[in-house]
Amino acid sequence: MVKRSKGIKIATIGGGSSYTPELIEGYIKRKDELPIKEIWLVDIEEGKEKLEIVGNLAKRMVEEAGLDWEVHLTLNRKEALKDADFVTTQFRVGLLDARIKDERIPLSYGILGQETNGAGGIFKAFRTIPVILEIVDEMKELCPEAWLVNFTNPAGMVTEAAMKYGNYEKVVGLCNVPIGHNMMESKILGKKPEELRFIYAGINHHHWHRIYDKNGKELTTEVIDKLFSNNSNIMENIKFIPFIEEQIRDLEMLPCAYHQYYYLTDDMVKKELEEFAKNSTRAEVVKKLEDELFEIYKDPNLKHKPEQLSKRGGAYYSDAACELISSIYNDKRTDMVVSTKNNGALTDLPYDCVVEVSSIITASGPQPLNFGKFKPAQRGLLQLMKAMEEITIEAAVTGDYGKALQAFILNPLIPSGTIAKKLLNEMLIAHKKYLPQFKEVIEKIEKYS
Image (cartoon, rainbow, N blue to C red):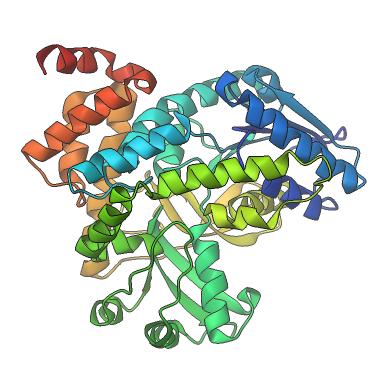
């Protein structure tokens, strides 16, 4: 990319997020790699109070680090995007109240409710994709050379929508899950992450991986042995239930933590229904955590990222974003797991779809490493989930009810038939404020229900 002598401008959409202090910390850690001049944190009117709280903490952090960076807070997205070099996205359409609905409404039917999986994940995509397409249109006008670094969930679908329907190639999706696996599994092996090589392939929240040492010796089976003797957990936001040992050994790869929803569906439903009955779904817990975090952020003496942020569930997202930005800017060729265009890396998926895969990050963006083919057990589920993602994205863009229903019926976590249609209708009505593309469909449902 063209390096500007006047310094880098970075805009963050959803700047009032509780994750922003980690983002600022990541930039400060890389102050010698990134000649930052301006950081713009932008949010919407509903997020104004949080933007001011977290934005003032960001300013204190920069000042404490002895840096002369300008930190701007604004509700004007176009002002933030103007001439930006990098744009990061971490917004949540409908805020946490929408996530609570995504989790509680499906659970009221005895179906898994989760932020990025099942019906909840589909509806988060429905709400988010029209907004990311608006942002991309504004970027084409105001900062056409900027890289878009997306960690708004569902990260894979949002990234694919920006690339395929927004016709914006300079976009990369990020997730913290691979980092969590790397850290935990390195610890299990008694090594540092940099002493190992992790190879990931799949789609966001639905990937598998292998582990090698620096001499090329595969350590995947050794980790599987240790996992089943230890039952370790890496995810703050998923209640860990041990996988079935015989199945994982047959995969000959390590699953993603989110595979619990697909490999252990009945166990996960039971556990989530218990939380549902106690009004303690993950979304409700996160809302309380957020309130506590922002009370901490208000402290004028706080000048660093508080330790409590690690409990939020998305730790390392922001630091990964900073490393990605630095790797593109400096052509560092860092080995990272990102959501990017397949380009033939995964033979079993369409060439032009977005996959989550180990990649080398260069000045021209991610270069995905060729993985090849999966075994049938992984391939079948992966192809089904990718087809579901493609239809979900199309429904989000067009507001087509038939496509939305098709996505529900394809999704393994949603029973097909009458329940799928009834649940879809209820969720459309519940989220209608944030689904303008479905306006006519929702009016029709309300009229005849």
